[in-house]
Image (cartoon, rainbow, N blue to C red; front, side, top):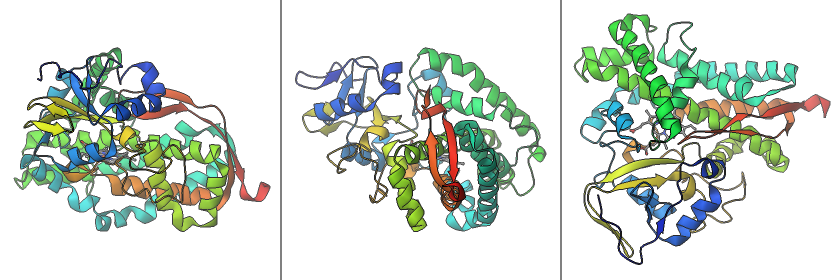
Length: 400
Ligand code: HEM
């Protein structure tokens, strides 16, 4: 760990994980970007990287910016997640990543496409009947929960606590604040549940992703004791992230109806629009790395062993990289955003997230003329930027 940074190096005592910052982070992020390429957090004794170029460079240089010592701030949670795909370095990480690579590839996901699109269409039809509802449980949570539980092959009736576990799992990446400490207990319950699957993988549906993980262990590609953690990573990472992005989509299109009109007039724009949604409201706000050597950024010298917080949510609003970054514009080519990470740890489930979100937005674009959104009630999580409830009325095409 570095001694205190030298004079002239920017430092901050604002805590990125305190309620007020989680609620409204963007002005604070801007002040950190303006302060320098790296800002020392006196609160957490780590470097904060808030600018686009520096975050992207760190994500690309996995030999310097290591994940193996944990990507969160709380030591007990980092130990619990040690050796997961998220918190590992090559060559071990390469092996873990390979296990599900084919299934998560565009070719592997094609097998799911018809099913996902049909579920999206039927969900939208039933919501149009309902007309007014809370968009979070009825739309944003319901869809990924069904898709991910089915993909992993969980036994029927075992979806009950997945959402709570995923929320707690992401909280544990934070520092030792109340949210983290409270979440550790629930997080433990998820590992107890996973242990029951470890004991009897036959409970997982044949042909599912969960089964495939245990089959890879039978072939000797990974160890048996890695299976549960690998499954947990996909289970956790696949829920709140996608849920946040779908809620944000509805909220943004409700707030900016002209942008919804652009998408409806040209549904080929949906993939670009989804990138813009991920850019402007990035579901994952931050993960940590540890330096394997000294690094100089401008006048700042960061030392080997230092912890570094990568702020994806700030990089995606950096005015050094984006024109008018606070403006939501579905015509923008936002494909190089960092919301899904970059480099070797880039999101392993991004194909699935895109498949789900594109299917839902397309189904909505065919039937919904306007979203009347009420005031969102924010949900505070140490890492995921999300909304707890969002009153929504759908104005269907024919009733316009
Ligand atoms: C909009 C939705 C999503 C967002 C914003 C998102 C975001 C991210 C980000 C930022 C990372 C990089 C972590 C790092 O830099 O250390 C990541 C990694 C990962 N994501 Fe996603 N994710 C999403 C959906 C999913 C889905 C649907 C799944 C699986 C079902 C998934 C599984 C994973 C896994 C396993 C990793 C670890 C990859 C590695 O470390 O090699 N994610 N995700």
